[in-house]
Length: 120
Image (cartoon, rainbow, N blue to C red; front, side):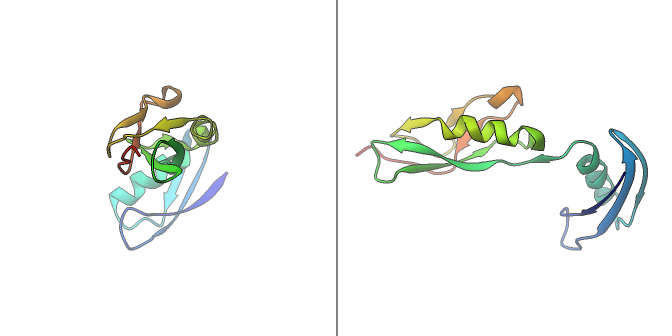
């Protein structure tokens, strides 16, 4: 299997071609630096993303509270994480960086508030 990956480590945006199967990587070509090579290897074998979303908010001026993961979450677990967040309602007051969901799905990532919400 071959996968073309656009590196996001720096503004160069190198187009890196990675060949392999599953977790085995046979070839990495097109990277401009070692950080790009490492990024491509990780993206090929185990892609992760910072998860940003919103949760329902009650007793506040707005209906939604923005949240994000404290660390990147495995890409394949994002839909299940989103389902948990969809079913969640938080009551104000909430301070920026409060933990909304600890260790979501056992990923080690906490979902934290990206903004504060005062009680009304």
